[in-house]
Image 1 (cartoon, one colour):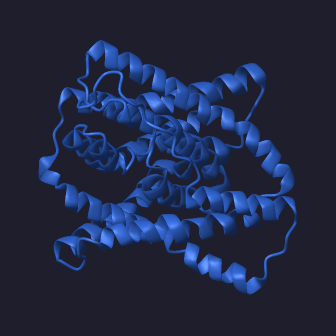
Image 2 (spheres, rainbow, N blue to C red):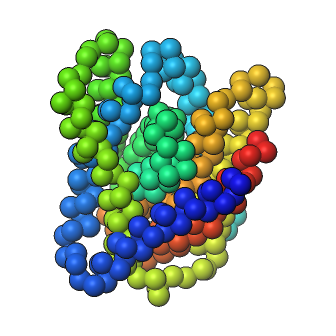
Amino acid sequence: MVFFQSIESVISIILMIALGYILKRQGWFDESFGKSISSLITKVALPASIFVSVLKNLTKDSLISLSGSLIYPVGGVIISYIIAYILVKVLKIRPGRRGIFMNAIANANTIFIGLPLNMALFGDKALPYFLVYYVTNTVSTWAFGVFLISNDDPTKVKGGPKAKLNWKKLLPPPLLGFIVALVFLLLSIPVPDFINNTLSYVGGIVTPLSLLYIGIVLYDAGLKSIKFDRDTVVALIGRFVIAPAAVILLITIGSNLFGADLAPLLRQTLIVQSATPMLAVLPILANEAHGDVKYATNLVTTSTILFVVVVPILMQIIQFI
């Protein structure tokens, strides 16, 4: 039953992505449209959605208990980085791909794939649980992941300047929306109905626009350019097998050894988010660091397509955890 339910949810997602792909192919969207959608989602709609959902689904008590669950995604990401680093050394992955490879395994596309997937599978009630993984993934990507790519620049002279921490990236609009919502929640600040309704309407466009955006990205990347070379296959195994396995392992240890039994919806959300496709910004980061842009694009494209097969299987597995 759960298997077929997850398949139906994924089919809905596929159809929305396909719509974006087809409309882009038909010339409905110009070259700037995808970028405009991306900005609208990340800078306006998603912060609004998060703000409303936090105040709707969280209380002060549940917030405290939820903060303790950060150890699972944080631990999972650390384990993924360690394994990715070992694989880089063992496989002797060339400069220009190393940082991309490690990011591909450790960091997920939580915004454009993870969020709509979570909403389709679990509904609005799971959004606070999604935020636990989103915060971890955001900090991991912009506090550490970007350094791996920047310092893997094959054109950089040894001993040259290292990448600097960009604080603006550490506090993107969605995370700021979460922080503002926490202030309102902790201080019990009332939100007028007309503001709450407006933010709800704006936040409601996140899921459909995110899926249309993925369709546009897939069209721009070109499905014919997909390649399954060694570095791509290993990275895909890392993203879809190693990363969720690390989270599952930590949750199992926490439950069996320490009696830290997580709520089923929280447990499922963390595992599903750990297996979402690779960062949509990988090609952009790779280009800025003179890395292998084609490799980064191929990873994003292949992982986005393959996730529709991975999710139903994963949903079946987590029923036994």
